Image (cartoon, rainbow, N blue to C red):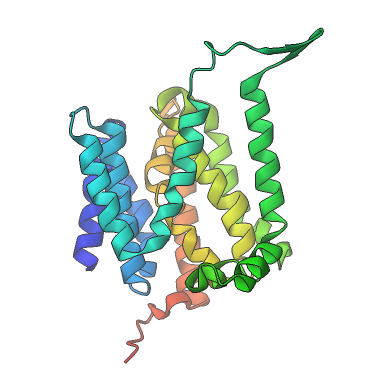
Length: 276
């Protein structure tokens, strides 16, 4: 199962032409950030790896059959772990944000002009904020009506322990924001990766501060960091800045892996504890 997971990740990375000379950096991103987790939640990570490969094919292949290939791989990933369905959210947002609104007339009321695209953005932000701060109410409603019984635990704790959030998000946010302009200019489908980044670190990470199961939902979006992080590093034209960015991100990987898996002992993989 581990071999299948790693193979899907590797094949997915190879689909991105802009990562042709940075495959080593993408794999270096995968191993310290995610590899240890794959030993603990094998079924979910196999599903995530299949999903990553499926989306890599959809985004990068020019063949006519890529839709069928994507659907087949997506169904397979979903049959392994149903949380895979969540990737539809950033995909829909990405497609709507890229929709050509030019042929839709701007609404006018007297002298007031309403830009439909901006209205949509505001609606999405409002819905996101309402859901974010009402997870406990949503959980109670689903519990009361016996809906999605197997997945209630993913959101039942609501928004808690928010004081630890900056410690989990700040280093990644700084590295990403330092190269965001270059990333947008030099990366095809850049907004999809940004949506996944924001969805995970601004929503999933906040909710997961008090819920292990919610944190696991973030794997679906975090896996795309193995594409965005190397690209952020190498988006700068100046060789010295590229080197500094690489050293910063590799340094973060080393600190993260040591703190999370060695000091805190997450997933019981350093040393590995066989649960039998």
